[in-house]
Amino acid sequence: MSNPNIEQLAAAQKANAEVMAALVHAAFNGAEKIAELNLAAARDFLNTSVNGTQTLLGAKDVQEAAKLQTNLAQPNLEKVTAYYRNLYELITATQKEVTHLMEEHYNQLSQKANSAIEKTSASAPVGGDVVAATMKSVLSASTQAFDHFTKLAKQFADIADANVTVASNATAKAVGAASKAAAAKK
Image 1 (cartoon, rainbow, N blue to C red):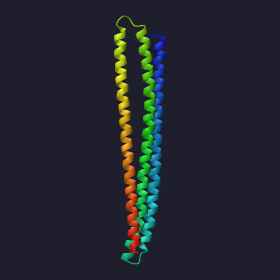
Image 2 (image 1 turned 120 degrees about the horizontal axis):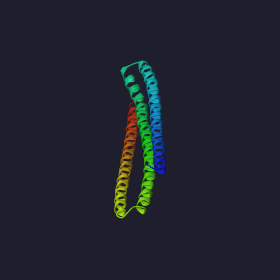
Image 3 (image 1 turned 90 degrees about the vertical axis):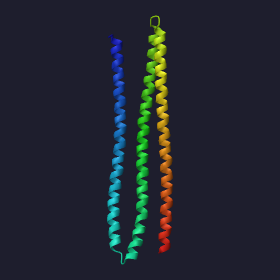
Image 4 (image 1 turned 60 degrees about the horizontal axis):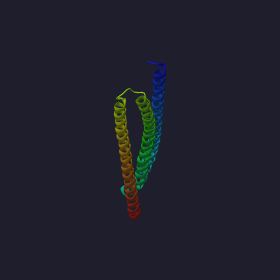
Protein backbone atom coordinates (compact mmCIF):
# COMPACT_ATOMS: atom_id res chain seq x y z
CA MET A 1 0.00 0.00 0.00
CA SER A 2 1.40 3.39 -0.87
CA ASN A 3 1.71 6.25 1.60
CA PRO A 4 -1.10 8.39 0.04
CA ASN A 5 -3.50 5.46 0.44
CA ILE A 6 -2.60 5.07 4.11
CA GLU A 7 -3.10 8.81 4.64
CA GLN A 8 -6.49 8.66 2.90
CA LEU A 9 -7.53 5.69 5.01
CA ALA A 10 -6.45 7.43 8.21
CA ALA A 11 -8.35 10.59 7.21
CA ALA A 12 -11.47 8.55 6.42
CA GLN A 13 -11.25 6.76 9.77
CA LYS A 14 -10.83 10.08 11.57
CA ALA A 15 -13.85 11.56 9.75
CA ASN A 16 -15.96 8.49 10.61
CA ALA A 17 -14.91 8.70 14.26
CA GLU A 18 -15.86 12.38 14.36
CA VAL A 19 -19.28 11.65 12.87
CA MET A 20 -19.86 8.81 15.34
CA ALA A 21 -18.86 11.07 18.21
CA ALA A 22 -21.29 13.75 16.98
CA LEU A 23 -24.09 11.16 16.66
CA VAL A 24 -23.45 9.80 20.16
CA HIS A 25 -23.28 13.35 21.52
CA ALA A 26 -26.64 14.22 19.90
CA ALA A 27 -28.23 11.03 21.24
CA PHE A 28 -26.94 11.65 24.77
CA ASN A 29 -28.12 15.26 24.71
CA GLY A 30 -31.58 14.07 23.69
CA ALA A 31 -31.59 11.39 26.38
CA GLU A 32 -30.47 13.93 28.98
CA LYS A 33 -33.30 16.32 28.06
CA ILE A 34 -35.83 13.48 28.19
CA ALA A 35 -34.52 12.42 31.61
CA GLU A 36 -34.84 16.02 32.85
CA LEU A 37 -38.40 16.17 31.50
CA ASN A 38 -39.28 12.87 33.18
CA LEU A 39 -37.79 13.96 36.49
CA ALA A 40 -39.67 17.27 36.41
CA ALA A 41 -42.90 15.46 35.49
CA ALA A 42 -42.44 12.92 38.31
CA ARG A 43 -41.76 15.71 40.81
CA ASP A 44 -44.83 17.63 39.64
CA PHE A 45 -46.97 14.48 39.73
CA LEU A 46 -45.89 13.76 43.29
CA ASN A 47 -46.59 17.30 44.45
CA THR A 48 -49.95 17.39 42.67
CA SER A 49 -50.93 14.03 44.14
CA VAL A 50 -50.07 15.08 47.68
CA ASN A 51 -51.90 18.40 47.34
CA GLY A 52 -54.89 16.75 45.67
CA THR A 53 -55.13 14.11 48.40
CA GLN A 54 -55.00 16.77 51.09
CA THR A 55 -57.72 18.75 49.32
CA LEU A 56 -59.94 15.69 48.92
CA LEU A 57 -59.47 14.75 52.59
CA GLY A 58 -60.81 18.19 53.50
CA ALA A 59 -64.13 17.56 51.74
CA LYS A 60 -67.19 17.65 54.00
CA ASP A 61 -69.35 15.24 51.99
CA VAL A 62 -69.37 13.00 48.93
CA GLN A 63 -70.77 15.70 46.63
CA GLU A 64 -68.03 18.14 47.57
CA ALA A 65 -65.40 15.38 47.09
CA ALA A 66 -66.79 14.64 43.61
CA LYS A 67 -66.64 18.34 42.65
CA LEU A 68 -63.13 18.65 44.02
CA GLN A 69 -62.02 15.56 42.13
CA THR A 70 -63.44 16.97 38.88
CA ASN A 71 -61.69 20.29 39.50
CA LEU A 72 -58.40 18.51 40.24
CA ALA A 73 -58.63 16.32 37.12
CA GLN A 74 -58.61 19.20 34.64
CA PRO A 75 -55.13 20.58 35.41
CA ASN A 76 -53.74 17.03 35.56
CA LEU A 77 -55.06 16.28 32.08
CA GLU A 78 -53.49 19.50 30.81
CA LYS A 79 -50.18 18.56 32.43
CA VAL A 80 -50.20 15.10 30.88
CA THR A 81 -50.94 16.60 27.47
CA ALA A 82 -48.12 19.12 27.88
CA TYR A 83 -45.76 16.36 29.01
CA TYR A 84 -46.42 14.24 25.93
CA ARG A 85 -46.16 17.27 23.65
CA ASN A 86 -42.78 18.17 25.19
CA LEU A 87 -41.61 14.57 24.98
CA TYR A 88 -42.57 14.42 21.32
CA GLU A 89 -40.77 17.70 20.61
CA LEU A 90 -37.59 16.45 22.29
CA ILE A 91 -37.64 13.17 20.38
CA THR A 92 -38.33 14.96 17.10
CA ALA A 93 -35.53 17.48 17.67
CA THR A 94 -33.06 14.68 18.44
CA GLN A 95 -34.18 12.71 15.39
CA LYS A 96 -33.76 15.78 13.17
CA GLU A 97 -30.27 16.44 14.51
CA VAL A 98 -29.19 12.83 13.98
CA THR A 99 -30.69 12.81 10.47
CA HIS A 100 -28.92 16.06 9.62
CA LEU A 101 -25.58 14.68 10.78
CA MET A 102 -26.09 11.50 8.76
CA GLU A 103 -27.12 13.43 5.63
CA GLU A 104 -24.11 15.70 5.94
CA HIS A 105 -21.74 12.76 6.33
CA TYR A 106 -23.33 10.83 3.48
CA ASN A 107 -23.05 13.85 1.17
CA GLN A 108 -19.35 14.19 2.00
CA LEU A 109 -18.80 10.49 1.36
CA SER A 110 -20.62 10.72 -1.96
CA GLN A 111 -18.50 13.66 -3.08
CA LYS A 112 -15.30 11.85 -2.13
CA ALA A 113 -16.47 8.69 -3.90
CA ASN A 114 -17.28 10.65 -7.07
CA SER A 115 -13.87 12.30 -6.93
CA ALA A 116 -12.14 8.96 -6.45
CA ILE A 117 -14.07 7.43 -9.36
CA GLU A 118 -13.11 10.33 -11.61
CA LYS A 119 -9.42 10.07 -10.66
CA THR A 120 -9.41 6.30 -11.08
CA SER A 121 -11.17 6.37 -14.44
CA ALA A 122 -8.73 8.99 -15.77
CA SER A 123 -5.73 6.78 -15.06
CA ALA A 124 -7.41 3.42 -15.67
CA PRO A 125 -6.32 1.07 -18.44
CA VAL A 126 -8.55 0.23 -21.38
CA GLY A 127 -11.97 -0.89 -20.14
CA GLY A 128 -11.64 1.12 -16.95
CA ASP A 129 -14.35 3.48 -18.13
CA VAL A 130 -16.86 0.62 -17.94
CA VAL A 131 -15.90 -0.02 -14.32
CA ALA A 132 -16.11 3.71 -13.55
CA ALA A 133 -19.57 3.92 -15.17
CA THR A 134 -20.73 0.94 -13.11
CA MET A 135 -19.38 2.51 -9.90
CA LYS A 136 -21.11 5.81 -10.74
CA SER A 137 -24.35 3.93 -11.33
CA VAL A 138 -24.06 2.14 -7.97
CA LEU A 139 -23.28 5.43 -6.23
CA SER A 140 -26.23 7.12 -7.92
CA ALA A 141 -28.57 4.30 -6.87
CA SER A 142 -27.38 4.46 -3.27
CA THR A 143 -27.83 8.24 -3.25
CA GLN A 144 -31.36 7.88 -4.56
CA ALA A 145 -32.14 5.24 -1.93
CA PHE A 146 -30.71 7.43 0.84
CA ASP A 147 -32.71 10.44 -0.41
CA HIS A 148 -35.87 8.32 -0.52
CA PHE A 149 -35.24 7.08 3.01
CA THR A 150 -34.68 10.66 4.24
CA LYS A 151 -37.87 11.90 2.58
CA LEU A 152 -39.82 8.99 4.04
CA ALA A 153 -38.50 9.72 7.54
CA LYS A 154 -39.49 13.38 7.16
CA GLN A 155 -42.98 12.37 6.00
CA PHE A 156 -43.40 10.12 9.05
CA ALA A 157 -42.26 12.98 11.29
CA ASP A 158 -44.78 15.33 9.64
CA ILE A 159 -47.58 12.80 10.09
CA ALA A 160 -46.66 12.28 13.74
CA ASP A 161 -46.53 16.04 14.24
CA ALA A 162 -49.99 16.44 12.74
CA ASN A 163 -51.32 13.63 14.97
CA VAL A 164 -49.86 15.25 18.08
CA THR A 165 -51.43 18.58 17.11
CA VAL A 166 -54.84 16.96 16.55
CA ALA A 167 -54.60 15.06 19.84
CA SER A 168 -53.57 18.20 21.73
CA ASN A 169 -56.46 20.17 20.27
CA ALA A 170 -58.93 17.39 21.06
CA THR A 171 -57.64 17.17 24.63
CA ALA A 172 -57.88 20.93 25.06
CA LYS A 173 -61.50 20.85 23.85
CA ALA A 174 -62.32 17.94 26.19
CA VAL A 175 -60.75 19.76 29.13
CA GLY A 176 -62.70 22.90 28.27
CA ALA A 177 -65.96 20.95 28.04
CA ALA A 178 -65.27 19.21 31.37
CA SER A 179 -64.50 22.57 33.01
CA LYS A 180 -67.77 24.05 31.74
CA ALA A 181 -69.69 21.01 32.93
CA ALA A 182 -68.07 21.18 36.37
CA ALA A 183 -68.74 24.91 36.60
CA ALA A 184 -72.40 24.36 35.64
CA LYS A 185 -72.84 21.84 38.49
CA LYS A 186 -71.67 24.35 41.09
